[in-house]
Length: 220
Image (cartoon, rainbow, N blue to C red; front, side, top):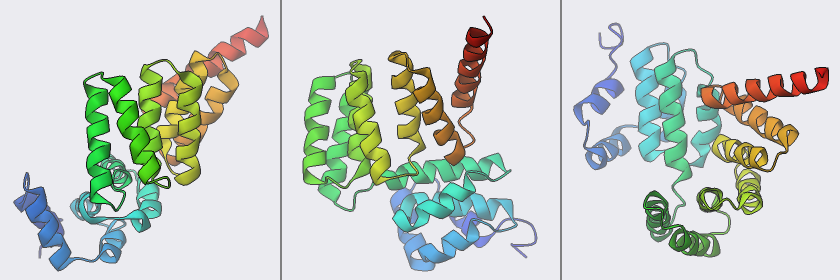
């Protein structure tokens, strides 16, 4: 009956424990495997798909990344938005709790505009976990805020080397190339980001404006 009315057991579970992430995480681990949740990403019932994405944001690991990337292209906006949030959540998990805490400290320094301290913390994250892509991506954000465009690009490139699906790093790379006046490289970075996540509407708009500017330039 619950499947017929579009409100699955998984959807009801995520609704019941709204605002109680640790409790919901515990319940999910008791009732679902990651493989089951990945299968539910393509379920015909909309609330089930959305709930599966949300559940993976709590208990998913890198194995869930490719199917979540595919889910970014789903016609249902709620499903694709949840998939994007799940990807970010997984990308922020290194597998080492102490490293994750340090990463969060680094992002808080960015929010407080304490950029030099942020660089120190995130560089330590990278030293401790050199294969953890998000450490480089967050340091790229700091370098961007400091207008250190090439350093930011270097960290974005390292992020994508470690995590080829990282549309955020590709978009950040594009922003830096614009500041450096390299519109061709910016377009390439933006196009790669959109191929992975077609819901980056601001990036799509920026890409169209660059293409129009280049068209007008060559017509003059």
